Image 1 (spheres, one colour):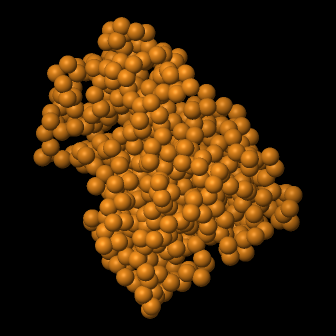
Image 2 (cartoon, one colour; image 1 turned 90 degrees about the horizontal axis):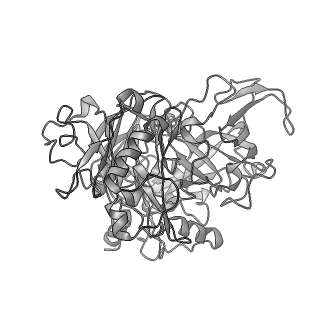
Image 3 (cartoon, one colour; image 1 turned 135 degrees about the vertical axis):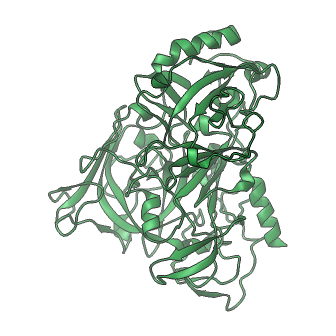
Length: 558
């Protein structure tokens, strides 16, 4: 079904026909900053939000070894799918009425002024979230890419791609002939980093590095390894002026304007696609941004270029209304760290059991809690959690990953009987992935699914009470009180179809091995992917980023 991620996550066969089989990327870090721009009705533009703690960033490149104080993390608001379609039909007008005026002489060369925080819009597509990339010179071209913690390579269709979904995607193909900085990797003079060396193909007079990826459900794409200048975010209805590349604000409000985005560009190696098949054609976004732990990932290349300083980022998927996934915001992405203003509970850390590739957690147990509840901590004595009774080996056979590019949650089919039996005991109904009719009260009374994750031992906070701290396992597993409990209420895993008025459970116990904690499990949490420390942080959150942005805009006007 179409809600499932390209590649059917746990069983997908994503591979390079090159050095090793599909190693991935993720370590985002973005201490470069930018943007603050509110758009009428939905905030389709970026907006500046100042974060609390500061870091020191080493800027490489033009001003190598220069140290910049006050560098901060970057957050991107997530927008709902309806607003993305609105933008697709009619480009939004950028409202600059509240932005502070620039004073004469208030700009200097890149690297000499204090950097604060860069904000840019992250959009929600067909169950996935994507960001704007602006590619090439002299006039950058927009390409939208799905932010995917389960992929390693950034790729999008180029002008030599035929029947590659232009009528479905947000933008046209990347016109390689219009970029003066576009270049193809010549494997006759340099080595391929993402693909394998092949003889000259149509349009090329030298050997090229070819990349090919295939997915279990039949989708695939082929590309040529290329390099061009890119920057993320910026204004959505037009590229930032190249004239501002050498200039940034000296004042503390640097990054307030989307025009500053151009100053954070870097040379990105990516896949310039010439062929795509399957779901890649009909997806809303143009391409994909690989965010796994890999040398080829977007964040890793950005880090190597000196544009970011911290090997971590967070995703906060907001709780959408039960009867509709529409809304004025869909959460936030923070590059370079996490924004504590989004946190409603302390951030707790699970171990990331793999140092490269997928973000993998160790699931100790799965519980169903009667009579629902949104938080990991019950708010009623009638909410009783019961273990489904699966062994740790059965739960983790084939690995369980946290994947932002997968809409739904998939678990091993060996758990089905145990899960379904406890479900029927609690609800009196058989568990099914078929559509069912439910009243709002019936929806809220369905069991909340609780995942117990092994804690990151070096990040345990002994000052927290495991029985009263939301997210700790003291109430359900006194022997492992510092493990994490991730709550997935029915309002997150039951998807509402307004056309039929029915709900469908999007937790599938269908995998022969392995599983995926997808976006519906991630929802309602700010999740920190900390590659350097080998951990994944979880904090409960309503992900109401809009209020943060509006407050920042108001203070800027003042």
